[in-house]
Image (cartoon, rainbow over all chains, first blue to last red; front, side, top):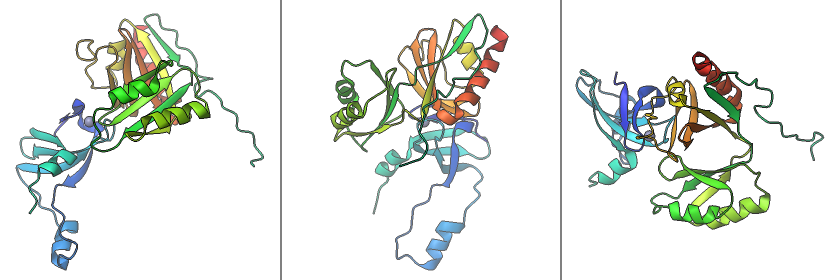
Length: 92
Length: 177
Ligand SMILES: [Zn+2]
């Protein structure tokens, strides 16, 4: 497990200051089918390698972050504020 | 109306003083702590905060993006809080936390070494100069740290955790006694 997360606001902090909030998935449309919503709510991949997750800096700036980490090497890649990540997202 | 009179007791009134030479741990006056929350995507509010606090004996402490604490040693009257709150509008909202957060001063030439037992924040004066603040974990307790002088830090903590944190700080300072 990654032990140091580089918060874009606070700098490098130990993982104990954070709460993992799960995989970054795009939310289906409100009228999407039953299957799409079941997938979104319950079904998770267990990726080997790169994984994008929401992390909450609970004991720091209290911002939600999007952290990219490698589940094999434990390397932490890009850490971004979730609001900034959402703004950068290309929406159809 | 309540049958009980509410009396304000200091959170750390009965806490024993540590006796170490190199470090001192003191409960700061329970004056005021005002939490300031900026509106999303608000411009840099530092100027607004400086103007709102005015010449009064108050300090502004950063607490993450769009969040600050305004602290001072004197209690804040209802009118003073209202004036402060109005001065921040429409950019930010003020919440009086004076009853809910307690400040502890830790001081000494090796104070960083003592605090480093509890937090991973780099407290070297080069990386964390006077006036810098950080929200962090100190052991298992969430705190707001500010370097107020070169060898003195203010540790702000939720009132219910104050005594527990005090005991932790005393224990952390034992080896320097
Ligand atoms: Zn942070």
